[in-house]
Length: 175
Image (cartoon, rainbow, N blue to C red; front, side, top):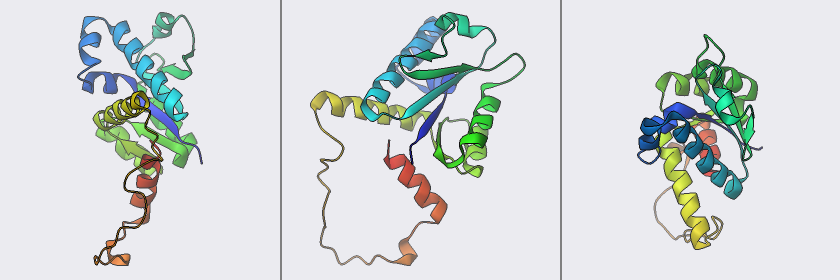
C-alpha cells in the first residue's frame, strides 16, 4: 500500500527553524523553500506528496501550476481553510494518508479516519535525516540493528501495541 503524504503547508513552515525565517521575510520564499525540501524528499523516498496552503488566488504565485517539482500544490478556496481541505482529502484517502500537521484538531480528525499523523517538527527531522543519508550514500535497508539480538526480555501480547497504533507505526516507518 503506497503512502500519500498530505502536508499542512503553513503549519510546517511556521514550525520550522529553517523555513520560518524565510517565511517572515517573504511569504513566497517560505512556500518555495518548503516545496524544494518536499521535492528533495520525494526524490529520495518516492511517496506521493500534496501540500495544502490557506489562501485565495495564491496559486498565481506558483504560475498557475498545481504541480511544482513533482509536488501537488493545493490552495483553499475563498471562505475555506486549509484544515478543511486536508480533512476532506483524508476522508477520501483513509488509511493511505499520512498527515503532517502540528494542529491538534487536524491530527485528531485525520486519526479518526484511519490516517497516520506526524507533527511538523518530527517530519522535518525525517526529511533532514533522509537528505543526510542520501548525502552520505547510506541506504535505509543497511541498518546496523538488522538481525536477531539475543535477549532474555520476554515479548508477548502484554507488550503489544493496540492494532491502530501498530498500523500507524508501520506507516511512519515508511518515511
